Image 1 (spheres, rainbow, N blue to C red):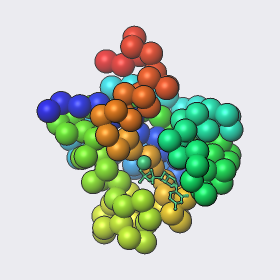
Image 2: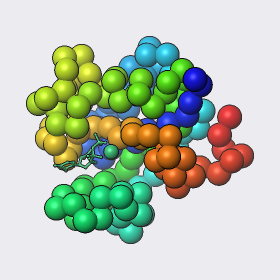
Image 3: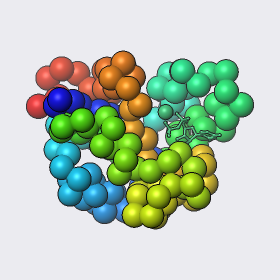
Image 4: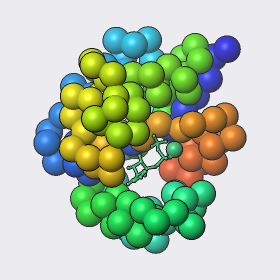
Length: 138
Ligand code: CDP
Ligand code: MG
């Protein structure tokens, strides 16, 4: 099924100047960019994006990290885009991620793990609408 998913290149990876390299991995993996922008989230915007994690012990630290510097947000489209993107990203914890995945190669810690990808069609719908209007996605 052709799906759309929301990807964020997180502040740690933007700071390292590896935006192009990360996008290239998704493109080589068969994903197509349907929307893209570079923004600097406020703490409140980061909290709204990660609202599903509001009761987790890492919520405060995660939302500080996500608002510490610019991020690149994009909508990627392709066959089974949600699971394909998560495969290319690798496990949440870089030390547990498979060789050749983005998080294994570029993640610094379980928090500073370089990329975000939606985990379901429901979260993709919420996350895409959080950053992009209908007219910006094509
Ligand atoms: O991003 P992913 O869906 O793989 O993991 P998550 O469980 O939805 O957690 C969201 C984000 O919170 C992760 O990508 C990490 O940046 C961060 N996190 C953390 O700092 N400490 C944890 N124990 C778990 C997640
Ligand atoms: Mg998640």
